[in-house]
Length: 197
Image (cartoon, rainbow, N blue to C red):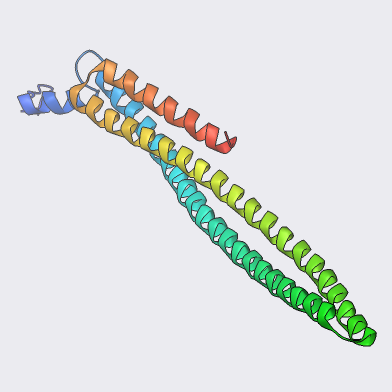
C-alpha cells in the first residue's frame, strides 16, 4: 500500500536491497568476491598463455631431437663411406705391394693417395654433421627444460585458481592469502621460463 506516502516492505524486498548493497555491514563480502574474481580471471589468462608456451617448447624439443637424429644418421652414413674408402685403400696398398712392375705400383700408389684425400674430405663432413647433431641435441634439451618450467608454472597457477574457488566458498581469508601466494609462485616460475633459467 503505497498510495498516499505510506510504503510497506516485505521481507524479500529487504533481502533484495541488502544483496544489491553488498550484504551486511557494507561491501566486505562483495569486495572479497570481486577481488578473487578479478585475480582468477587474470591468472587464468596468464595460465593459458603459459600453457601455450609449454606446448610450443615441447613441440620444439621434439622437432630438435628429430633434427639431431637426422644429423646423426647422416654422420653415420659418412663414417660408413669413410670405412669403405679405407677398405679400398687397404686393398690398393696390398695390390701395390704385390704388383710385379713399377708401373703397376705407381698406378696403385695414385689410388692410395686419392683414397687418402677422399677420406680426409669425408671425415670433415662427418665431423661437421656430428657437431650439428650435438647442437640440435643441446637445443632440444634446452627446450625440454623450458617446457618443464612452463608446465610447473601452469600447474601452480591452476592450484591458485582452485584455492580461489575454495576461498569464495568458505570465505576464509587465509585461503585468499594462499591463493595470492600460489599465484605469485606461478608467476615467478613463469618468469624463470621467460628468462631461460
